[in-house]
Each structure stands twice: as C-alpha cells, then as structure tokens.
Length: 262
Image 1 (cartoon, rainbow, N blue to C red):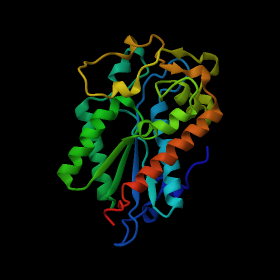
Image 2 (tube, helix red, strand yellow; image 1 turned 90 degrees about the vertical axis):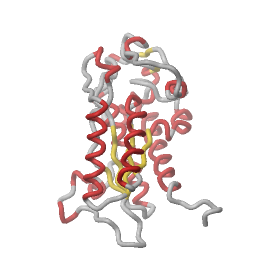
Image 3 (cartoon, helix red, strand yellow; image 1 turned 90 degrees about the horizontal axis):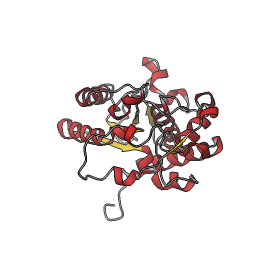
Image 4 (cartoon, rainbow, N blue to C red; image 1 turned 30 degrees about the vertical axis):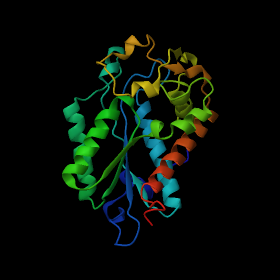
C-alpha cells in the first residue's frame, strides 16, 4: 500500500517536527481520528479489519487533502469500540459505553491541547455509529469547538456500491471488506476459508425504529454477512480510492461557503 508521508502520521513525528496550529489566515491542520474495533470477521479475515480500514481510508484522504493545500494529519487508530454483539464468536474486544465515550473525549482533549482545533472522527465499525455521533455532539456543545464525525462506508456509500457486484453496501467480512483488506495486507486474508453469509439491509439497520440488543450470531452462524467469495484485491484498491476521495471531498465542502453565503 502506498501510505501518506510520515509527516502526516502523528505517531511518526518527534516533538520539534509535529504540525502546529496554523497562524491566522492560513488553513488549519485537520486531524483525522480513525475509530475502529477488534472483533471477529468470520473464518477468513483479521479481527482488526475495521481499525485497519478506517486508518487506511483516513491516510489516503489526508494525502489528497494535503496535496490540495489543506493540511491534514492522522492519529493512530482507536482499536476497540462497542462490539458486544460479536462477543459470542470469540476474538473480540469490547468497551462499555461509558469507557468508549471517555476515551473519545480524552483523545479529542489531547488533540486540542496539542494546538489543533479541527478534529474529525472517522468511524469504521457499525456498532460505534450512534455512540460516536452522540459523544461528538456532546464534546462540541461542552467545549465550544466543533468535533466532526462520520462513518467512512456511509459517507462513501454510493461510491462503494458502484464497485460491488453482489452487494448494495458494505456489510461484514464481505465482498467489500475482504477486497480492501486483500489490497492492503494479503496475509490477513485466509483465501482457503473465504465464506459467504446472509446479508442485511445496512440502511434499515441505521433507522431509529423499535429495537433491542441482538447478537450477530442471530443473523449468521459463520460471523460473515455478505459475499466474500466475490472479493478481489483489485476491487479493494478501487474501493479504498473511492472511499478516500469521497471523504476528502466531504471535508473540503464542509468549510466551503455556499453561493448564498459568499
């Protein structure tokens, strides 16, 4: 994988080299925080899939932004989140809602303390979505500094769908996730164990309807949802490029005045 320059990865910098808050009138450095999980991804994918993919999309988006003269940096990925629905399969770490919220708050406070005010939480795990939006909103209200949040595969849903053959959206250990991990790190895909599983309606799963906690095993016995056997590394490269491009474009647009504002 082509990464972004080390100067865009905060974990690779030494103190004198770290990006600083920009002087008035120059672009702020946008700090992207990949938020993932460590959880089962069926018999063929690494448990760190969601964190790996969130970080990869952030790094590619940061490169695009920086190339366009909009400074961007990426923190190390948050590697665990709210994954209680996967614990029945094993290979899963999960946090309580209180711990997850406190972790996000403290990381954002540290970023602000380092001199940055432009923070974007980029999620890669479905189970984090509702909590991440809520905590980002609360941080913004309490601190007076806006914290942006998104889920990369929702932000880029149209672009992702255009690259898929057998699914309408990213699911779990599926055609999309398997392809992207295959493109990034082939040794983390067990090609001899590629497994398909029953799909679910991603859009419907995000609707605020009557619901209760349900373990993922109620949906799939294998831990897979979607068509992993349709995965290819070439498709994965296209998916990553599309997700990064759309994320970068969204980040540019959020600070671009509309014609009525200019």
